[in-house]
Image 1 (tube, rainbow, N blue to C red):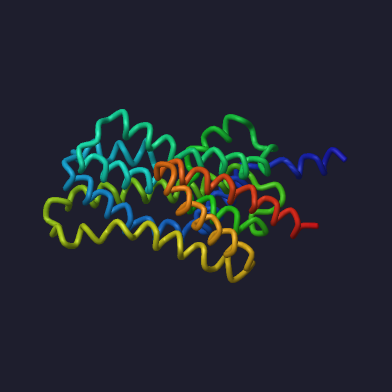
Image 2 (image 1 turned 135 degrees about the vertical axis):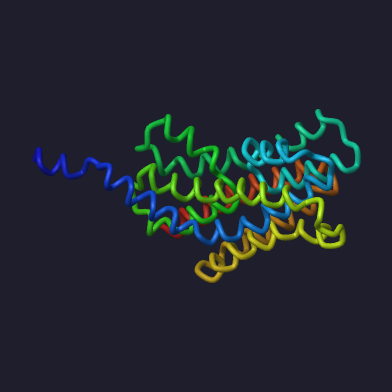
Length: 243
């Protein structure tokens, strides 16, 4: 019995192997983040943000949709407090994603959960959700660290690259760069829909709710409300599928 318990204790080799496995799983997101991060870096510099602050924004905020929204608000002269509040509202969905993800990671120490929470984005969360079978029933913190650190690292590197070339990129080209983030998310969504068609219905319903709510609330609140409702619907659908 003692030997069996010792075999179940993860070793340094196990953590290293799990980290690289997570990094490999994150390759689609890592490759997708590069052009988007470059786009953000370019647009940030052209909006008037310095290289240092562009990089700092990607390292601390680390939320593509919020960062692009903040650039648009800065461009039209919005004051700082409004940008902070709008970003906070838009990022409330991260609380929902964190609760959903960490409900399966109760065996991971709280200190690691706090570290991993910073790495949750729409794309990395979608990837981790779709790869549940490959991650196993009791995944280690290392495998999620591989997924999240790979995506985060590429986001920061891409931002730095974009900020360095921002002043030489034509305005007509930079104006079309903002759509890259949505293209990446669609690229992650389509395979999930092909594997389980009800995901498509939830995504379409959430998009419709967001459009309806935007008629009565601000864009940030519309996204938050649609995300919360869509998340609860997704939890119910997946619970029904597991029965």
